[in-house]
Length: 314
Ligand code: SF4
Ligand code: SF4
Image 1 (cartoon, rainbow, N blue to C red):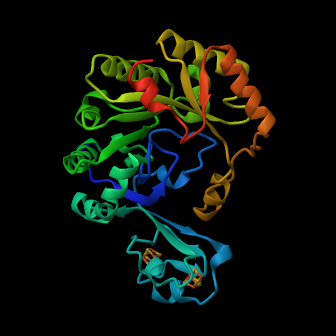
Image 2 (image 1 turned 90 degrees about the vertical axis):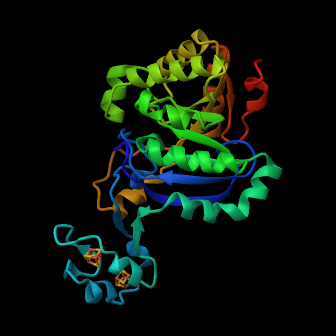
């Protein structure tokens, strides 16, 4: 997928939780992992997708009427075998019940969309964060966009699942100041079972990036752990990651509480439901924080990271 142009499935403005200052987030479509708790299921496939949100449908019948391929047997029932993704149906749906995920955007087009916010990024110490999906699947496009932004004095950060081709990603990494690096399940076999791949390459990439930062050759790296009930919140997982970080000389981590946003998206995209997961209580989150504290790791909430303190070498 190296030289392929990505699809962008969302651009979110005025965000406060994904890097310093006020930021815009660009969501790249396509991800190499398949975590069973994923809240951004629309990010998995690199291809465009069409979601049907039944609760928004006003039953006007336009989708059935306008589809040139007669792909709808009835309202909300689209046969993907006949669909050629022309998006006539989504363009004509008056209520937003049919939603398109994934639009091809040029670097120039994205620069123009973001340009009105440049002064806000600069005054707030913010910038643009590439997220997804996995932006490193598109190293050429992402590095060109990041270079264009940096030329205009705009800071660029990356959120990554950690599974990427290091050599191909180097031009992108060189354009970044900060990488939020997701860590999930410490045990390789469990990672494979619940995220679709093992984690050896992810751990190696983490170590490489940290080493690069220490040699003043790459962006600062900040680990983030999604805390998912009965999956990533166990004592062994906490001890495993805390030991991993400590051995590398890191004493900080952001935990991202699980929210079951993915369940609706699964339904909208016609995917089968997955294992039901609950939400942690505030007390449970506190005790997770406490466990990390006993292991020598200070926990942060998304958006509250003291990046400058650590970045300057505490
Ligand atoms: S995307 Fe085009 S071909 Fe597919 S269902 Fe919609 S209108 Fe029909
Ligand atoms: S066009 Fe949209 S609102 Fe109208 S029937 Fe189709 S899905 Fe429902």
